[in-house]
Image 1: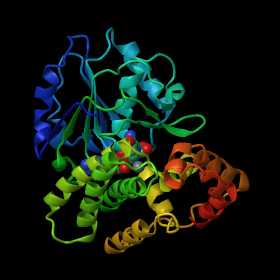
Image 2 (image 1 turned 60 degrees about the horizontal axis):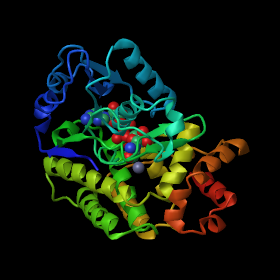
Image 3 (image 1 turned 90 degrees about the vertical axis):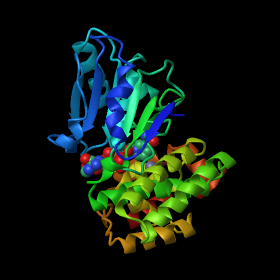
Length: 353
Ligand code: NAD
Ligand code: ZN
């Protein structure tokens, strides 16, 4: 679990104070990965105080992180500094937070990041790392994974060393998220809840977090009783609870299939989950019905026909990626999942998208 967390509008102002006690010396910098949407945004960046060799690195977020990118970022740090950093700070959405987690792990674990994709392969504790979400929904701020696209598949580095040492939850940082993106990333949280609550891995720990996040999502996306600020505050907590819910269970069908879309077509996590989830009535009837209400209420039109022109070998690749995520299927369907989830079944579903 995340060791320390602060919550509150304006809590981002405490960053400097929080980091001060973690500085290891002049030659051990803090490296700040910041979503490049904030480049030139004085309101945010003026609150990142740089000393000694500290550095801000702006990260483009058109594409989701790859193992090559992480290895490059780690090499850059090793070549530039004589000592390991005092800390790695990620300020942004799921992409930037995952980059911060992965870099902090790979600075202390030898070799290439692709070799750590999977479960519990990391051997050594990471560098001190801090997550500061600026958009809510993924749960990346609280989860024990960092999702990377590697040469063979899209899969997380899941380990007990992956969670942040410190998280700063300041809902005010999410105030300028564009509406569509707010919906897509928010729905990631909703889908986490549905997949966790309807999974065979469910237990009282996951259920208590999942139910809370599910209620918050309904309040935020279906009702009209919240001010903008309240909705931002609540979505940040929904994201946290949704992330906690899957930490002790698993995601399911939507994520498995969305990873296939992400791997082959570069479709991003949030929108990819929405595209898939829209067609999953047979697996999650109640969740999909609510999702469709939310979509209608916010006038969201999802991309259609994204698989229309694909060749058989492309479908095969997506199906390979989806099927390789066995724990997700086992959670969704049960131990005998592969009698129900055949290649043909997945092909039919992908063809609808
Ligand atoms: P993202 O990081 O892709 O960001 C989406 C967009 O929102 C970007 O264009 C970004 O610039 C913009 N944005 C972010 N904050 C903003 C702000 N305050 N104002 C204006 N624009 C802002 O989106 P995401 O949905 O948060 O993250 C998706 C990524 O998270 C994927 O790479 C996915 O694999 C990963 N993920 C990780 C976990 C985990 O547990 N580690 C869980 C789910 C998803
Ligand atoms: Zn997700």
